[in-house]
Image (tube, rainbow, N blue to C red):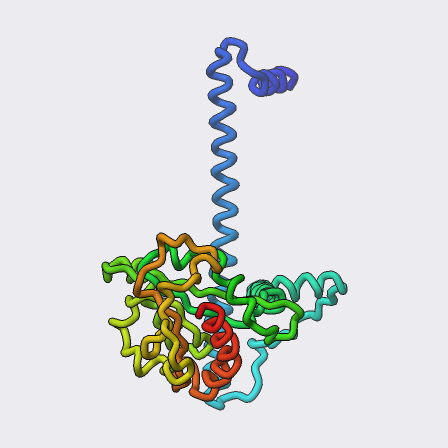
Length: 294
C-alpha cells in the first residue's frame, strides 16, 4: 500500500529530468485547454440565451397576431410594463432642459445678440439733418473733406438733437463700365437715385448720360432769375468760390461741375409724398447755399 502511494506522489511531482522549457510548454498547453473549455461553456450559455430570446420573440409575435385578429382579448405572454418613474433633482432637470434645447438656445442667443447690436447701432448712429449726393468722375472730389462742414452752415437742426450734421454720399463714376461694376458704383448710384432721402446733388456731366436733367431737376431759372451761374436746372460752380469755401483743391474743379436739386416724384424706394417731405426740408438750405455762392 505504501509503495502505491509513493508512486502516485511521484507522478504528481514535476519530473526533474524534464527541462524547464518542456515544463513551461506543458503548463501553457494546460492553460490553453482550460481557456478553450471556458470559452466553449460561455458560448453554449450564450447560444441557449439567444435561442430562448428568439423563442420568446416568436411566441410574442404569434400572440400579438392573435390579439390583432381578435382571436384572443388578453395575453399572458405579452406584458406591458410601465416605465419606472425616475425622480430628478432640480439641477438635473435644468441640465436636461439645456441639453435637449441647446440648438434652439444657441440660435436664440445669436439672434438676440444680433438684434441688440442693430438696436445699439440705430440708437447711437448719428442721424444727419441733411444728405447730399456727390457724384464725379474724380475720386478725389467724391472723397474730399470739408464740403459737409460748409453746407452745414446753411442747414437747420432738423432732428432736434442739438447739432447740425450733413452727410455726403460720394459716388465715383468711371469711364470703364467694368470698373463701375467692380467698385459697386452702379449699384450705389441706383440706390441713391431711387431713394427720396436725398434731393440736393453736386455733380459733373457724368450724370447726364444716365437721365435727362431737365426732367429730373427743378428749373432754377424760375427760382433764381437773372443769376449768372444758373443754366436751366443747374447752378454752375465754375467761377464761384465753392472750392475755397469747401476746402477743395481748386485744381480738382472742372467747368462742368454744378449744384442742383431734384423735383419730387415717385421712386422705386420712395413715394412722391416722402420725397416731397425731403424737398420741403432741404430747399431752404439749398437757396441759402446758392445765395452764398452767387
